[in-house]
Image (cartoon, rainbow, N blue to C red; front, side, top):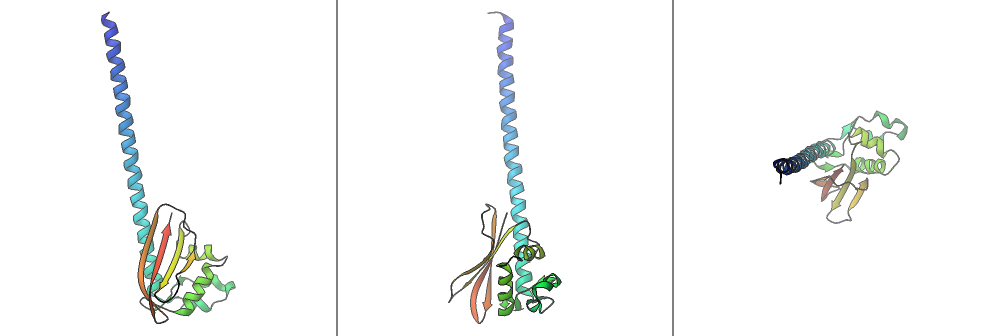
Length: 165
């Protein structure tokens, strides 16, 4: 065997090794970046769910009588709120809000809540009644669920805010 042939085998080995090493590094970096992006998105969705629950369960909204506004003046509603007091839900506001979530105005409701880029669902589970669900059918993989205790028409229950992307 000639000396030059040995060098070419060594060179091929080194080139293959470097290519494999590069692919391993690239794959690892891709997985890390994907994980970080997923974590950032999850944290953003969790913060959005918290802000949404604080707004809906902590105030009556603005204007305070938004549930009585006609459909053609719906754009006058600045902030939705479902509460008489902290976590004590007003039946009229809840009924009107869920009517809006089941109507063609649902996308406008999502936009006003700052949720237009997400799938959004609210679930109310009262101890003595069936669970009620309003909003999008959740099909996304990245899902945040925030549960809060409520008092609704004198009954204790749980409200779940589901946000997905």
